Length: 494
Image (cartoon, rainbow, N blue to C red; front, side):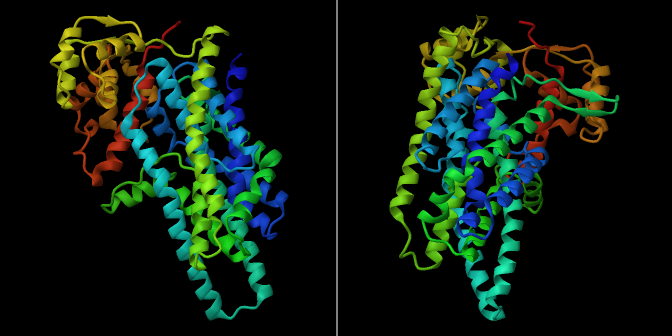
């Protein structure tokens, strides 16, 4: 049953590999500089490496956007995204898998009355605009730089051909790595909370976590899509927007890959933040959008007269249709999975508005006068709590999201022995671990209560002021808290 429920994620991974991997090497194949089998082989290997090494970077954003907490719900969300992508692929139109999975998650939020994190959604939508623009700019500069170098070096055409082929292999590998790192989050992101895999330990030494197994399975499904179907979607971007030469194909792949890598790499984000610049948001972005921007950059570098704006318009229409269709398909599918197949698509969460909850909300600047009418009541699920909030006049999505996060009732119990075993001293400082151990045998209803206690015990558990130069540090502290919560959360036995 478990494997059946993750098949939709595998289907989505296959769809993503079939559609998005073609964008990495499609221009190289369509210009006949690389054979399809060679390009596909390179793509498969480096997609898997990228997913395993850097795949965690963009996964968190999808988890915040919608906390899909039941395996049947994750199955339905992934299936809805995959169906919307596949329908458009069969029409020969490259589409954005990022937009499909975002649309499907929002569909799940609507169906289950769960609030959407508007801040995360806005960040993702902004990248849909910045992504092709950056790729266009990078490719424009790279192509003009290459033209200048070739003109000055007076290299022979045959020698240039050899260098270009070798360059295409390198950038195809880099692009595939970036694709795996950024896009595996779209395949398995909705399964993180409800992961069916357990940690595996070999010879009492080597451990593979359940999340790592998810990354591997997602990467393999993407590789299968590359091998079996990606040749079907090569032509649209490879030749129809603008007829590319081998040199311009190299510039396109490199420009798009750099853009994708920027939104995937935690290391690059930390380096940029360490020199005082704002950290790059690590969000899942669309390689399709990157490549469309990159090919358009080539067209602009050559004067813009021969760009096929009709094809660009058609692709843009697909980008608009994709999230809407995915959300609608998800809503309908969730209804059938829940009511016809009798599967739980959401695990009910209890909520409680208490004096401590009101105090915590006041710290974030949320007015709590109306909320006092709900004090000392226990709400059995998301729908009941949301309806009660609406009844007292609270309807703003961002406010509801914050109230949900604060009033959510969970069970945590700190065990100092477990802390010593599970909190890696390479990742957590000794002071952080010691602070956790001081909470031995304490029970908590809300995750923010643990934060408050640790803030009093150690400066190393405190967030720094919310300014751009502190973004990287605060994100790292946030990830440590998430790991801490997952370690000490008492799982529901139901």
